[in-house]
Structures are given as structure tokens and as C-alpha cells.
Amino acid sequence: MIEGEKIVLGIIGCGRIGRLHTNNIIYNFPEVTIKTIQDIEVGSLMNWAKDLGIKNITANSNDIFSDNDINCVLICSPTPTHIDYIIAAANTKKDIFCEKPIDLDPKKTNVAIDSVKRNGVTLQVGFMKRFDKTYSLMKKMVSEGKIGKQYIIKITSRDPYLPPLNYIKTSGGIFLDMTCHDFDLLRFLTGSEVEEVFVMGDVFIDPSIRQYNDFDMVIVNVRMANGSLGVIENCRKTNFGYDQRIEMFGSYGSVYADNPLVTTISLKSDNIIEIDNQTYWFMERYKDAYIEQFRSFFNSVKNNKPPLVNGVDCLKAILIGIAAKKSAKESKPVIL
Image 1 (tube, rainbow, N blue to C red):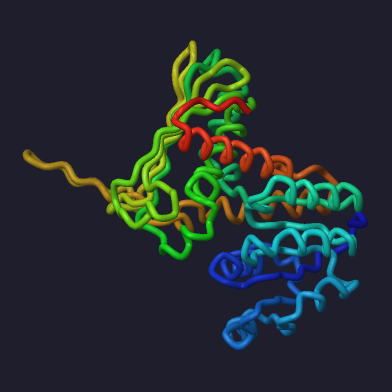
Image 2 (spheres, rainbow, N blue to C red):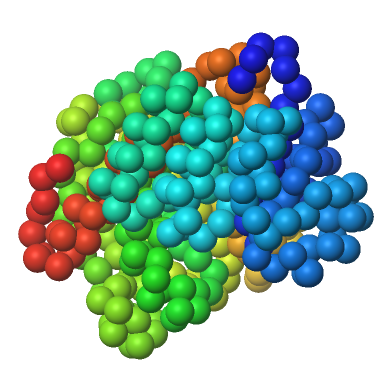
């Protein structure tokens, strides 16, 4: 992007996450113009887009790529379409924000990354957890040596309810659709790379998940290049909300990030203590992080700075996920 140029955005795919991003951009970044949105379900977007002041609605993505006024593209379409859209955007010199993952195939992912490099455009991938203010502060504390030498990092990530079986069928499995966020967060917080994974998984909640060779409960043990150990625990259903907790333990002490609660109200009496529950789902828990990731992206684009999370970061998360699948299948450690 030319320095000083105004950001004019085209959005591809306006399902749940696409609409969330569109609303966040319009209400938080008035300096950014959303010129065109594309989706195969044009009819369902008309009233919503009109209310937001977006005039151009199309079913044809080429309307975005051929528009010289549009200099940034936001890709929120289904995963199998990401590669083609990234390449088309890069070839037309448009900076790119793409929802994770770029693709489930590392070779295809590399093709997209090479296209971005060759055309000299920015690509940021939607690992929004990096932009959570709690995790950012945790990263700062660890980087400043507040816990000393890193020993162990524990990440708990549990969804409130099971996804539809049709989703599980095509998602690539729990390690690529869910744990990949935690693999990226693990690398971000430790500042190190995963060298080895050993996985245990099972199906405790819905036996029908077995037909897709997937799990609803997993524990991923990792060894990091800096010598520390990691444990990621994932569950597809809690019954009580979105459970997101992290502890990092080192030679000086530990730093712990708990679930934010809906309210800070607590009730205490002689025979009971009650507190409010945590936020129910990811859009509430990471509401601010979704906004901050675009603040960071727009800053990278305007100032020609590398994004905080790029295509290579996405590739590494997928490679760790593939190693985790192999470990679970073979019941043995896998070296990356």
C-alpha cells in the first residue's frame, strides 16, 4: 500500500464471522472504507448491508479484485476458497487479511505465502487470541523475565457445545480447527518453537464423532525448543460456557490468566458463595481481541510493517496440528 493512501476494503464472505468483522470495522475504524462485500447469498445481505451504508453487494469476487480503488481484501469465506482468493488479491497488489487457516494442506499454504512474498503485499491471518489484552500482558511479563526460566505452560481451551457433525466432517479434525489456535498461542507466549508432540485423545461426549476419526477430548503434550514443556487440553463441550485458561510457570514463579466473568458480582453468606459465570462463547470472550487484530492489521498496512501474525505462523500451526494427528493415530511422540 502506498504510504498515506486511504484503506478501501473489499470483504469476501459474510457469514457469521464476516458480519462480525464488518460491524467491528465500521464502528471502530471510521477512517477505513468498506466499498464492496461479496457472498454467494446476496439476497440475505441486502438489508443488513444497506443499514451499514455499504452500497456494493455482489456474488462475484472478481468485482473486488478488478476494482483498482480497493487496496485491501478481507477473506472470510470457507477454508477451501482461501488459497485462490489470496493469490488473486496478491496478484492485484491488494493487502490481505484472511481468516484461519490459509489451508489444511501445507503445500497449498506455501503456494499462497510465496504469492504474497512475490507481490510484496501484507498478509495477516486471523489468530485473534494473540491480540487479547490479557495474553498480550502475559507475553510481556514472560518476555521481561518476570517468571524466570520457562518450565511449563498449560493451556485449557474448552468450547461450550459440540459443533455440528457436518462441520467435524470437513474441518480437518480437532487439532486443525480448534487446537490450532492454541498452537499459535503457545508459540506466541513462549517465543519458542514446538519440537515434539505426544497426544492422547478420546471420544467421551458424542460417539458419532468416531466415524470421522476425530476426538472430542484431547491432551497435547509438547516439548519446546527453549527446553520448556507444554500441555494443551481441549474439550468440545463444557455445559457451562467457554473455558479459556493459561498458566506459565518458571524458575521465579508463575503467571496465570483466568476466565473473565460476565460480571464481577459475587454473593457470599454463611453457607454459600456464588459468582457469575464466564462468557459463553468466543465472540464474547474475544470481543476486544477481534477489534485489536484489525487495529494491528491496518497499522501494518499503512506503515508497511510486518503483521504480528503472518502466513508462516499459520503454516507452523497447521504443521503442529498434522504432527498431533499423527501422534494420536500412532500413540507415540512425533518430532517436528
